[in-house]
Image (tube, rainbow, N blue to C red; front, side, top):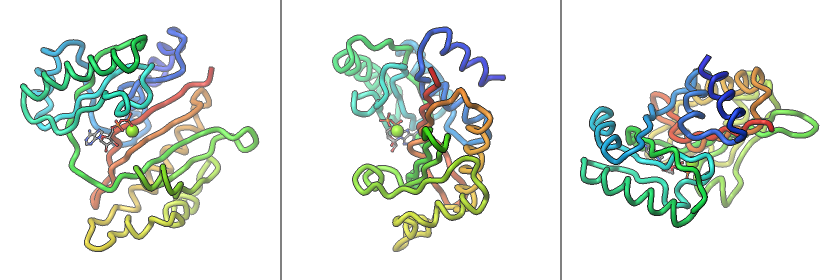
Length: 231
Ligand code: ADP
Ligand code: MG
C-alpha cells in the first residue's frame, strides 16, 4: 500500500515529518478528497506540470524541514501563466534559502488553485490518557485567535461527528451566514469519521493536521495536510 511505502521511506530516512505531498497521498488512500499534487525539481518541470494541471495553479515548497510554508515564503497562490510560475519558483527557493538555510529542499509542488470555500481544519493529536483525539474548527484567524474548536476521543461515533461540528461558535458560518455559501455538513461529518477510522488503524501516526479543508455546498477539499510519525 502507498501508506506503508511512504511511512517506510520516512522511517528509513529518520524523519518524523511527512511532506504535504506524502501526507496528501496518505489522506487520499484514507478516502479524503485532496488536491492532486505533483513534485517539480526544476523551474522547467514546474512550468510543464502547471500546463498539465491547468492554470491557475499554486506552488509550494516541499521540505520536511519547513512546517509553516507560508511563514517562510514557501506558498504562491493564483499563478495564472508560465511567467508567473517561473517567477514563483525562483522566489520560493530563494526565500527558503534565506529563512531556513539548512532545510533539505525536495523541490516545489504544483497543484490546482482550488475555488474559494469556507476554511475548516481537522486535527489529530494524542492525549497521554485518552489516546488519539480529533479536533474540528474553522480555519484561519478563528482557530488561531479565538480557539473556537471542538474535541472528541477516537473512535468517533456518528453522533460525535455531528456534535463536534455543531458545537463550535462559528457554526452559523457553516450554515451560510448572511448570504455566504453554506457548507455541506454531511460531507464534513463523513470526513471526520474517515479521519477517525484512519488514525485508529494507524498507530504509527502521532499527529495529523489538515489545515485547511475548503468546505463547499457540494463537498470538501483538503488543500494542505501534515502528518507527523511516532518516533
Ligand atoms: P502553510 O504551511 O503555511 O499552512 P498552506 O498549504 O496551508 O501552507 O497554504 C496557505 C494558505 O494558502 C491556505 O491556508 C489556503 O488558504 C491557501 N491555499 C493553499 N493551497 C491552496 C490551493 N490548492 N488552492 C487554493 N488555496 C490554497
Ligand atoms: Mg496550512
